Image (cartoon, rainbow, N blue to C red):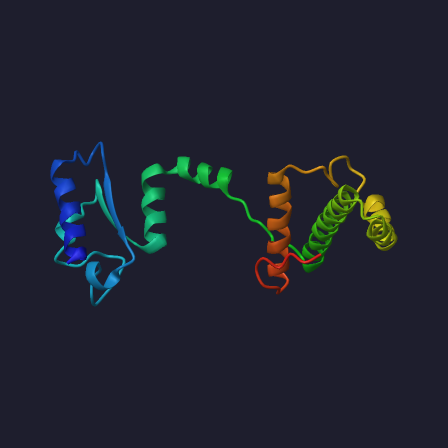
Length: 184
C-alpha cells in the first residue's frame, strides 16, 4: 500500500511539473516493486515506464542510481562539489587511543586527588591529609611534569569536567571496558 502511495504521489507531482525547467527523479532501493522484474533492475517496471521520459523524469535504483541522476543533471558542478567535500578519516591506532585514555585518566585522577585534599583540609583531618599527601605526591609530581600546558590540569568548569569524563568513558569503551567506567 505504501509503495502504491509513493508512486501515485510521484505521478501527481509530474502532472503539474514543467519537466524542462524542473526535472524530477524517482530513486528507490525497492527493486521488487518498482524495477523491471525479469531484466535490468535499473529500469522501471513496465507498468510504470510511462512516468519516466528521457528529458525530465528519471528512474534510479539505489545509491548508484542517485549518483547517476545527480551527475546527469548537475554535470561538472556536482563533480566539483564532490571533490570539495570528499574527505577520508583514517581510524586511530591503538597506541593513540591508549595514550589519550592515559591522559584523561591522569587529568581526572589529579583533579579528584586535589578535591579530596580540599575536603580533608576543610574538615581539618590532619592525619588523613598527611596520609593522602604521602600517597598522592609521586603521582601528582608525575602528572604535573607531564601536562605542562596551562589549563590542562584545571581548574575546570563543570562542563569541561563533564567532557573529560565523557571522553574517558568513550576511550575505555573502545578499549573494551563497560560504558561509564570512570574509576581512577
